[in-house]
Length: 141
Image (cartoon, rainbow, N blue to C red; front, side):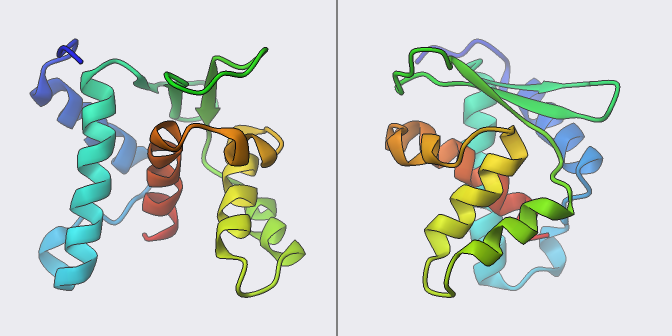
């Protein structure tokens, strides 16, 4: 994909998202494994901002992220908007057993985007990785 937004602007937008969502982005204080994980997730989102598929929005009720589903084909769903989750997003995990971590993550993401978690099961994995990065960054901080 060609660059639509300058990398510096995309990094600034990522930082705005991190600040508004209270993400722990102090990589200097992280263990090596945590820093590598954070940096990888950050790179994935910055690349999506650069190519224009992920947009950081200022909203009346807080900053949101809108992701254009580039490779997934849903009849009535071309984009999804992530909002800071409420406590019920974590409660959605209770429906699944401890070993069902992907089901739990999908339920959490479903609450973040106000959609049935089944959409993530039907989503192209390349789109899914971006969605998971948003949730994992939030959960990891």
